[in-house]
Length: 88
Image 1 (cartoon, rainbow, N blue to C red):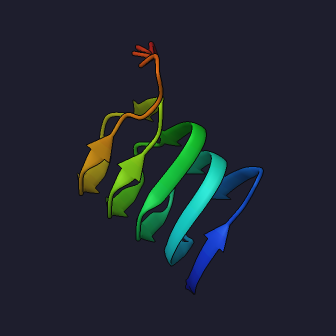
Image 2 (cartoon, rainbow, N blue to C red):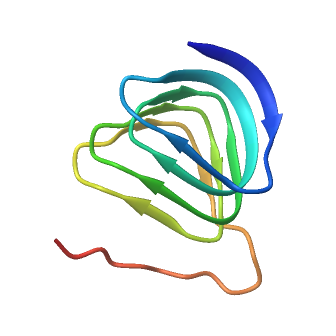
């Protein structure tokens, strides 16, 4: 388990079985594990079906797979909002 507040310029990958208790600011976030905290991404957030999120997400692009547990708010920021449909 990690407890921090982080600002990262690159990609943050939270794999299983990692639990992260932090507010993070990143370029890209790919989450398969569990995060308790706010996620802010400049480019996009991808949440895998095994992920558990407790906190808010701010990103211009958000991809959620089936099975995600997300308890929080989402704000799509940016001048142009993008809707991305993920196919199997």
